[in-house]
Image 1 (tube, rainbow, N blue to C red):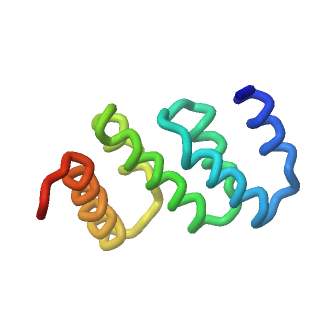
Image 2 (cartoon, rainbow, N blue to C red):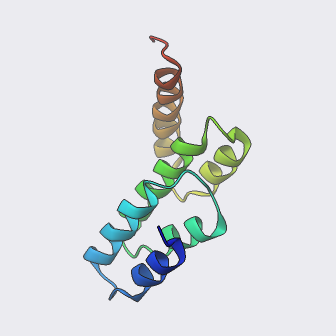
Length: 102
């Protein structure tokens, strides 16, 4: 319930896979793209886990704040081929959320 204390605890963990996993799990439950959430994700040491955590954030906020989701999506470091692949996945998930078949 105390988000500030939880964030402080996460940041106090020694760098490594366990910390990265804890941050990814914690931020996967957040529904906002606040500076604190983005900073936590950016502190994930493993580049692949960091990218996945950011993509999850983009997916979660895409319905409530599509402009912010798009801005964040463009900032994620990935190849053009990856970006196209993830864009298709994100677009498909929006249809899933709305109950549409594709």
